[in-house]
Length: 293
Image 1 (cartoon, one colour):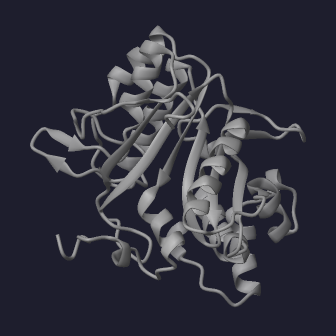
Image 2: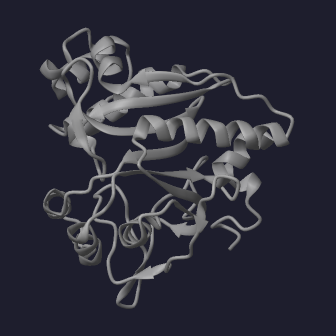
């Protein structure tokens, strides 16, 4: 990062606001929340200074435990002014190759998989015609369990399909980028038409085999649209009978004042150590896992 002239920053771990994403749960400490990512304050800094920045942060997510998950973990997050998500993928690949080479490991040219094409291919149907019933049929035809609890949640159904039939087939010997996510899964990314004239989210996820390493966005700059997304996520929380949380009004203010065109990515350092070490469980690369903390 220093060689690329990217400024290191430090942002607060405690905030009055929390992640509104209904699939992410924040730890509450008094009237504050431990951050699940330094994304919001980092974007406020980009809005204020229009410069490339990075941070290595300890972050916290409630309810996350398993082979690849720990409630407390480390992220390397950075933002590049003037880049889009495709150009940022090159940035990520260069960093990944540099880190792996230090440990005597090679990094093959990444593969790229389009989310919308993958779902369409597994279902044998045009993407815009696919519904939960089509995905449930695929599971039934392949004698795989399909949770009844998914119901009409198409995004949850597509994500499960991706995990079971697409990501599970990724090579263990090279990185794979997943791009062209449905617009409904844009999170904090811009939405645009791809080369096939399909409206998609301008974001990517990086995998090595089944291990997700990084998540990147061509960042949304529109404060009105960002507020609407926050409010929609709050509605989903209420529908799921989950607690609503304070949204980050400071971020909305920063976007209102102007966020330059930029792309950002978060890379899980503990998962990167899993890859480098060949360990089977994230506990094996942590001095203090949640169970030993």
